[in-house]
Length: 296
Image 1 (cartoon, rainbow, N blue to C red):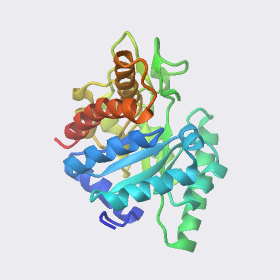
Image 2: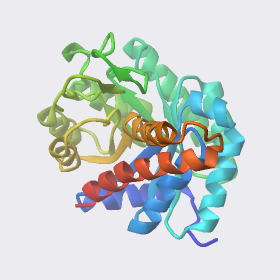
Image 3: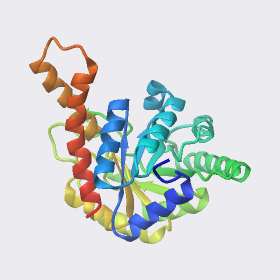
């Protein structure tokens, strides 16, 4: 294998290394092979590690085991570390599936649940994963989020229902949640929102709140829903404890726009690899810009 062995102790070490240097590792979601190749080709060009994420919906579309095989093959072909994350996973049954298939990390999403139910769900998943590690020796990272930021990777005319100042993560909640659940990484709500607003500027991130949370917990922080946020906000997040940044909607839009532009010029084209290539090229522009920003 050209790349590093993708065991999670190295994964967590790498996350902490990036954090200590004031950098962040890029996390991009995929829905097909075109998108996976676009992301990894940029990562290889820049010689940076990358995390490929697949939500429950994306895994159902592509096949949970097939995604693992795709990332394994990409690791064979490239020298940079490529990690696979089971993004937004809502039940312990689904957590068990991806862990046993060899995913490197999993996000347990109980953000819509009442606080104590969220804690209980995440704690049960962490306990299962730690037991799996004892039996197999394979370290799997567990992440969870607290505070509601929406769930859909879409273009929105308004903020998703339930996203509000009242649902931002507080420092006391963050500290209590991390201690009681035992998660390896933590994703707070600090004004970030899943999806992108169509005709408005994305809400500014609450960097002061993030700074306080970072001081209160001793695990790497993750920023979800970063599509559309300004470079200034993203750098502010990295400077205050964020070690991984998730982008999905922004690259999906670029991929779609590239395909649509090609098909507008070639309305009789039916070969997916031809318009898929144009989608890749537009998507690569966003991936490269984000990865360069995170490493500044």
